[in-house]
Length: 113
Image (cartoon, rainbow, N blue to C red; front, side):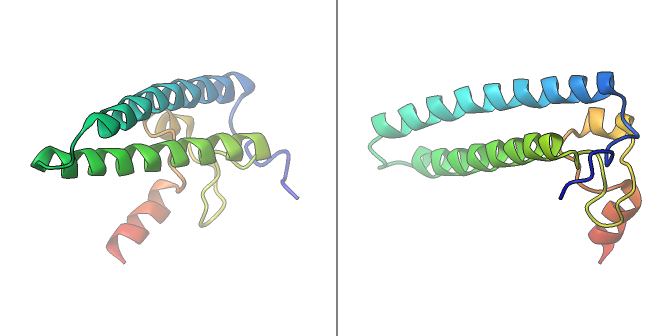
């Protein structure tokens, strides 16, 4: 069961701003993915651009999955909490990196491990 106060360190206004940003990013990425899929259908797959297109499709799919997961965390009330230690992730960090799952300390530890 999700703790409804899990992201209480963020105001309603902050959460709404972050939600709007994530939704806008999701919309942009979804449109981009549709364009890439159309390009893939039109491509013969016979040149080097085909590999670049496949990488772009994979990257776009991953970005959409991450954005969707962030919206799921918002709905569950767990968005903005470190996935490792449970500490609140500051709004300033989330504004810059809305998909951040870890506080700075845990992120640094994970990167040096």
